[in-house]
Image (tube, rainbow, N blue to C red; front, side):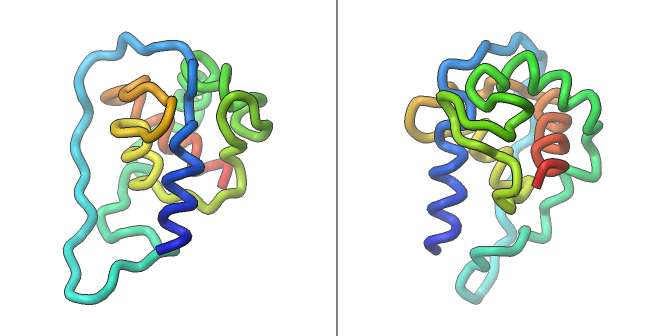
Length: 126
């Protein structure tokens, strides 16, 4: 549970004060797979398919325009938001943070295809 909280907290400041997006669509909603056991804290849920669908190069371009103001140098250097590279983040955790962030990060900075692509880019720097 501590890792989940750490991941969500790290993503909480994912784009504090970064530029807004004017992308179309609200993107799909993902729900973690239901289980009868305690939820895993360090593995991707079975529904974690966003990375397979996204375009990493397009996601990097969108990230640079919407996220890099807070996650500098492609998410490898902290700014107003934390370093994202090498954190072991899952697609679902990244998408959830972008859609319903905690703390100062604005919600839904990217949506639709741009969201899918940014998730793919952030996964690529894990």
